[in-house]
Length: 247
Image (cartoon, rainbow, N blue to C red; front, top):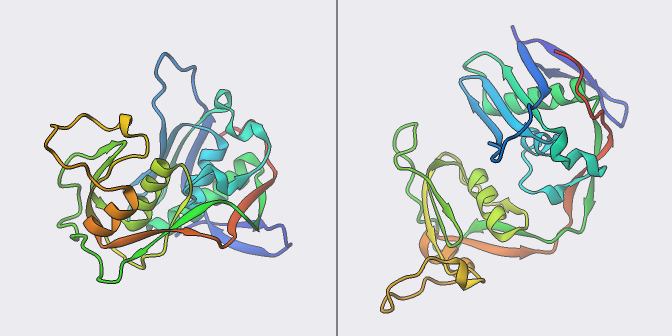
C-alpha cells in the first residue's frame, strides 16, 4: 500500500500526498575534472538524480522546463551544494505519481515551502500546425536509435512531447511549453540552421542550408513554435534548508 504524507501548503490546506517506500538524499561527493549530472530519470519505480542542485531537483519534481520558472535565493543553484537522490516506489507506479512523491520528498528533507505566482517571463509555446503533425509514433517501449543533441540538430526516439519541449527550451535558452495536446511517445528528427551559424557543423558547399528553427519545426514536424505573451507561472521558494535531513 502506498504511504501518504500530509504536506502543509502555503495557503494552509493539508492534502494527502503519496511518498516513496524508501529514499536516500545525501550531499554529492567532490567532483573531479568532469562532473556527471543526472537531472532526473525514472525506471521501474526508481527515481535517481545525481549531482543536482536544489533548483534542478525542483525543476524535475514539478515538470518545469527552465530555470526561469523558479525564483528563490541564489544558493539553490549553487553547485557546491549538489545532492544525490535515489528514491524507490513500486515498479508499476505511474510517472505522475512519482513526481508527486518527489515533491513530498523535497518538502520533507529540505523543509521546502513554495508558492506559485504568474510573472512576465519570455517564453515560447509549442503547438500543432494547421495541416497536422508529421511525427511518427514510436514503435515498442524503448528508444530505436541513439539520441543526437547539438546546435542545429535534435534526433530522439521514444520521447513524449513534454520532453521534446524541454530539449527545445535548452536550444532556445527560453522556456518552451507543450501545448500540442499530443500524448504518447514519438520519434523526432529536427535539423535547422542556428542563429549563430558558426555553431553548425560544416556542410558541403552544394548542400542547401536547413531553415531556421521556427520554419524547421513546422516543415519537418508539422508543429508550430510561437512567442507567447501570456504570463508564465513561476514557483517561488519561500523556505528551504541548504543541507537535507539525514536518511
